[in-house]
Length: 120
Image (cartoon, rainbow, N blue to C red; front, side, top):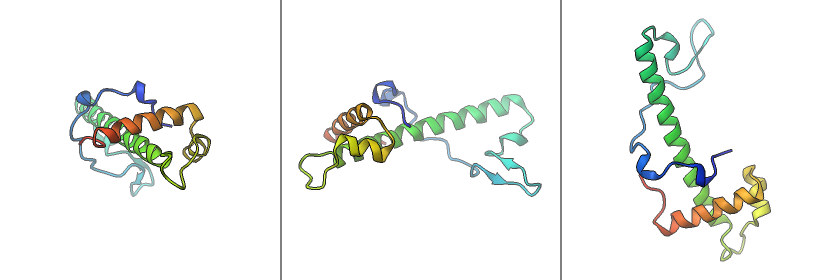
């Protein structure tokens, strides 16, 4: 489940372009071991810290963006002008949220839509 909108960082704190990902998570090496963006092969702890930090920031930025898109979709699906609109209970069920969280996401999404959608 995503962070509630009030727990998220303001957009100005978010990196504009997340770090490109070099490998797919869960890729299997020839020996049959998992590799996670090649972090396990780094021997220099400073290099490991830098790369792991970059990845953590990239994943946080991606999660924040995905949450914004979730909120906009929730607002659109709950829009009373839609003939097939979803109730908060149905929206919560489909997204795996509580009704209260669904209400907050709809409100957050409505605000994003009014401001022109998700910012790059």
